[in-house]
Structure formats: C-alpha cells, structure tokens
Image (cartoon, rainbow, N blue to C red; front, side, top):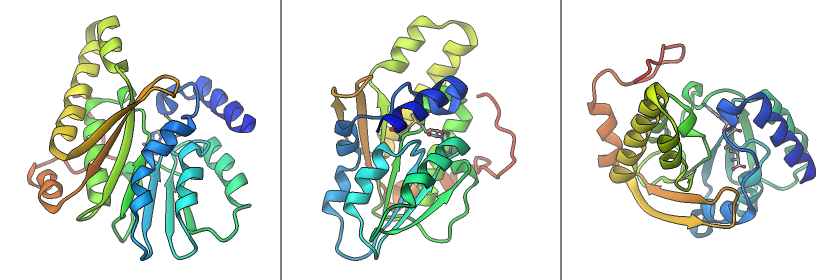
Length: 231
Ligand SMILES: C[S@@+](CC[C@H](N)C(=O)[O-])C[C@H]1O[C@@H](n2cnc3c(N)ncnc32)[C@H](O)[C@@H]1O
C-alpha cells in the first residue's frame, strides 16, 4: 500500500492533468463505488475499470470476480500500467484480465460491459473532451449496464469561485456537461466523507432509450486522432 501511495504522489507531481488527485481513493470510497457488484448475477460478467491508477478500486472489484468473469482495465499513464502489471501478475484464480494502456477514447472492444467503473478527473479536461468521454461510456455499455463514477465533493464549485477568465468558463462548461449526464442517466448519488478530499459517488443504470440519445446528436462521435476543440 505504501508503494501505491509513492507511485500516486509521483504521478500527481509529474502528470497532474490526467491524475487529478493527490492520494489514491480510500477503501470507503472503493466500497461505495464497487457496491453495485454486490448484486451481480451468477452468470459470467464483463467489467471495465477506467483510470485504475494504482488499483484502489481494482482490488475491491477483484473480490467480486471469479475465473469465469472478465475484467478490462483502461489506463492512459504508462507508469500506472507498469505498477498494475507488477501486482496483478501475482493474482491467482481471478478473472481474465486485460489492460488497455491508452485513453478510454481510443479503445476498441467487440462486446459491451455489464459494469463500468471510472475515476477520471473530468474537472481537468476540456468540455468537449468530457462530452466525448461520457458518450464513450454509453457506447461501451449496453441495456442494463451499471456505471459508477465519482467526483470530489464541491471541488468544481470551489474552483469556479477561485478562478477567472477562460479557466472559469471551462469549469462552468464542464459542470454543465456533467450535470446534464447525471440528469439523463443517473439513479443514485451519495457522499463519502471518509476520503481525502470527500467525494460524491455517482451511480447510473444505462437503458436503450438513454443510450440512443447520444447517437441522435449529429457530429459528436469521437474518432481516435480527432482534434478536440475547447468548447
Ligand atoms: C483520480 S485518478 C483515479 C485513480 C483511482 N481510480 C483511485 O480512485 O484511486 C485518475 C486516473 O485516470 C487516468 N486517466 C486519465 N485520463 C484517462 C483517459 N483518457 N483514459 C484512461 N485513463 C485515464 C489517470 O492516469 C489516473 O490513473
């Protein structure tokens, strides 16, 4: 665990834009974020975790999975990928695990996931990038997919208050995109105080009507290599 903390702090300093946090999530947040897996079906399931970093959620996810299940991890930072590989390689009797060492916007998969768990620092991204990422989650899901995510409690509001000019406008637009997604697809939220900083866990259940929304909007589908405009 000390190794996780060291690796996280190093990447916080070197890659703040994509890491977006000083510390890995607490076990309390991990418990809440993975709580939907507690009522998983007995049949094999496919799980995707996006942005696992050192594996705070991954360890908890693994406790719910067996050899017939499938876990994909999508992590953009090569140092975190190396860290994950070093401890995941020692796992026995667990699910089939694949690591995609690239952005969520660039992975190609042939089947939808039953569960998607994410911890991306959306507040650090451009509004259009956030829009593409949220739509990507919908594309990677299917009817009934349980999607869980979190954001630091009140952080965006605080940053909006403290920032000016284009940064303030960017944060406000990100807030608008995130709130719209929660309104359209969210079905439960709860605050986890025992995390630093405290976090708001967000749970979503995708249905076909909700998922088809994004397909009706013209010109929004992201293609790898496409330029993302500042919205
Ligand atoms: C806030 S950290 C969350 C880490 C971990 N889930 C936790 O809660 O302790 C965000 C993670 O998302 C990864 N990340 C950022 N942008 C990404 C992207 N576009 N695709 C995949 N992973 C990304 C970062 O490298 C980092 O590991």
